Image (cartoon, rainbow, N blue to C red):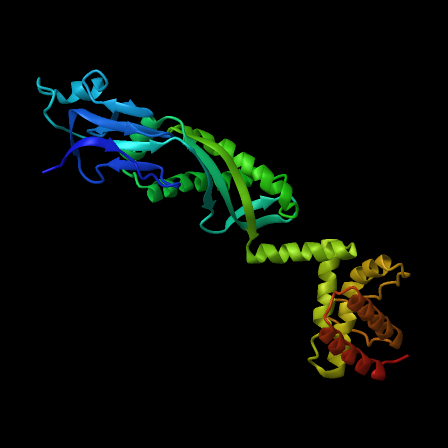
Length: 344
């Protein structure tokens, strides 16, 4: 049998509590003449048969048929006004909550104005305030069937995250991860504008949304690193890829001296644009690109001058921080061996 409740209150509200149900389980037996004590930043909402009915704001209230008109008419109280009637009371906090967390559950693929397509995760915070407690109780308790603080926070986080993919896709058509500071500000405002109506529909005002961190996926991080390296030497993407091909060819010693020479020859041909960009950055005169062999034919032996030029390019790349000292020593050893056997 339910306990008769003569005093209805929420005296131990915590700083992060959003809703308190009285009683915690089942329906309470409440009778007219009972006291309802509502503290600051609280609203008490009476709930019966799946619907939020009468509501009390801050103060001490004695329950009568005058201040419970909806509940009284629904239940049909006995004439002595002392007969207990079953109902629940939800105390709702009306203060503003700040620093509430949100984050994408996984990587989201979106366009990028500079990098093309990127994969990223985003994290942030938001602030909110319950503006319509009766609507809030109807929608959250009545429709969703949740009322604990942790359940409500999960539900609100889900609303935000559901809007993030479309917001990021629309925003990043003209933005790039390379400009993170401006991007975070734009995304926060866009997410807030997009999700505000969803929050209002459940009686909540979405005050502010902040994007605290954007983390690129592994492939996107590699693309950002490539872009940074291109900017450091003033090269285009094609030039940078050519330079990478030169490095990989030079690092492959297979095939003995002839193989080294062929690989280096192809590398110099492919990487000439990159070497040119590096020399220009260091105010060195450009060298003409050697003739590349036709497809399917053996590469011509490297001349002594070509190998010496490759050694010069290698020194420049080490000075620019393009390669490690260990890589430099290995490549230089291979080039010096090729130089000993090269024609003048």
